[in-house]
Image (cartoon, rainbow, N blue to C red; front, side, top):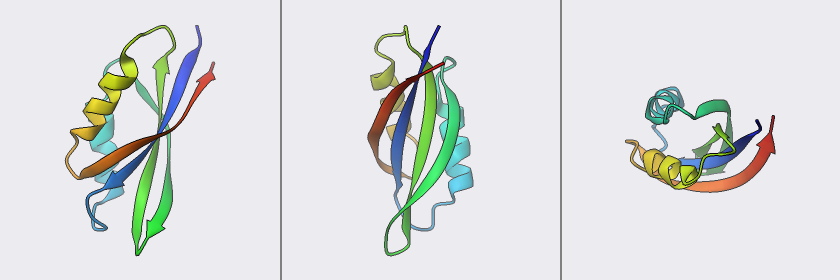
Length: 90
């Protein structure tokens, strides 16, 4: 069965947000069927960076993206999220 990797750009509420703590909060909020595929960072402006989270989910589940986005948006110190890419993987 194939999986889908969804890449999210996660904007912190402030430049002082520690990405290691944010990563742990993301990992703790994921549903049991989702897992982290990797992280990245992207500079935005004036010292603000966005965290890029690549999350792997099963291809055959429906309604997963909305559930995942809601959970990410509820994390403390997350200002907003943006879906960058959705791609199929093995």
